[in-house]
Structures are given as structure tokens and as C-alpha cells.
Length: 115
Length: 109
Image 1 (cartoon, rainbow over the protein chains, first blue to last red):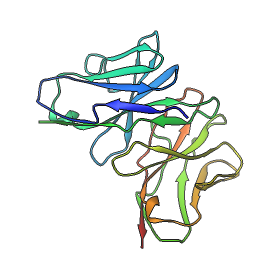
Image 2: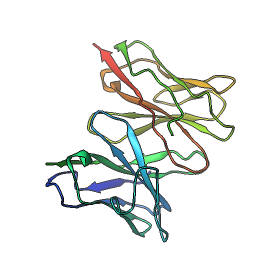
Image 3: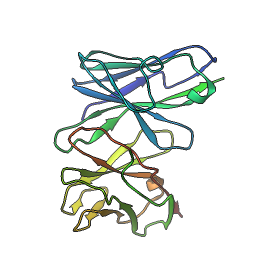
Image 4: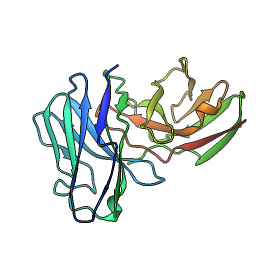
């Protein structure tokens, strides 16, 4: 199966700054997903990113706060903008496997701490 | 958006079977039932999935109720490495996963 990696693995950032998280897959995938996992919580879907189109955001998430790029079929970035301590979370990317099963393969996550 | 209900936590003795339940009473005909687990400091990993029939793989078994409104993940012999949060997820053709709260499994030596 394809390998998925994220950079950075963790970071500590100051309030008001922005951080861009990279997600790299070693094969071409049409669809990618970004999730947030707040401390001690489950995963929440942020958005779906298809190559060549604007990302589709879930309720409660907006493009100005979480802009996403999808420049090609193996790469995506998520930016957490104007960060506050409430943005401290683990951010994960994933991609789906073969239809119709739609299993997902997850990256290891990026642990973000905002001071 | 979470469409599944699971107990918050369960315990099992090492080398004993574990049955992790999941209720999904609003499941639609096209929803697949997925189980993932998340070990500490890792992303979720695939365990098993099914549609209507019971399924077995090297990691676990999935028992699906006849009406599909519930399912049970069965770990035949729990090991310490099985300690994780287990998520039961429904997915339709849209591919999106909406995670519930999951069940935190503790394995007692």
C-alpha cells in the first residue's frame, strides 16, 4: 500500500502566526482529507481536497482559517492561520483506497502546540 | 455527523477474547462499516471493514447484525499491543469518514 508522510511531525508556535503542514503520498491519489484531533478527542474532518479544484470544508471550518493547497496528485498542504491556543491539536491527512470499500490510509499526524 | 455509538472504554485480560460493540441504527444500504484503531501518538490504522456479511482477517473478526444496525469487532486473543482507541465508522460513496468517540481498550497483563 502507499506510504503517506507529514511534515513537520510536531511544532510549537506563537499566537498569531501561521503554520503550513505538508502531506506527501508516494503514489497518485485523487482525493485527500485533512482531520483535526484536539487533545483527548476523536478525529474531526476539516476538509476534502481534490486535485485541480477548491477544497470542500466541513461545517465549522473555513478557508480563511485553514487554507488548503493540492498542487498535484501526491501532495497537499494545510495552513493553520492566525493561530490561537485553541488550535493546539494533532492534524492528520489521509487518502482513500479502492472503491467501493473506501478504506482510508492516515498519515502519522502533526502535533501542533500554540503558546 | 458521527453516526455511530460506542462505549467510552473497555478492559480485557491479556490472551482473552474482546468484543467491542458499535451501534449504527441510522445506517443506509450503501454504508460500509469500518473499524480503525489508533495507537498512542500514531494515526488511525485500518482493522477491518464489512458491508453485510461477517468478515475475518488476520487482525480481527467483524460480526454484523442481520439488520445492520449494530456490529461487533472481535479480537480473538488480546495482547498488550492491542491497547488502543477503536473507532467504528460508517462510510458511503462520498468517502468521508465521520469519527465517533471510539472505545479506549485497556489490556490487563
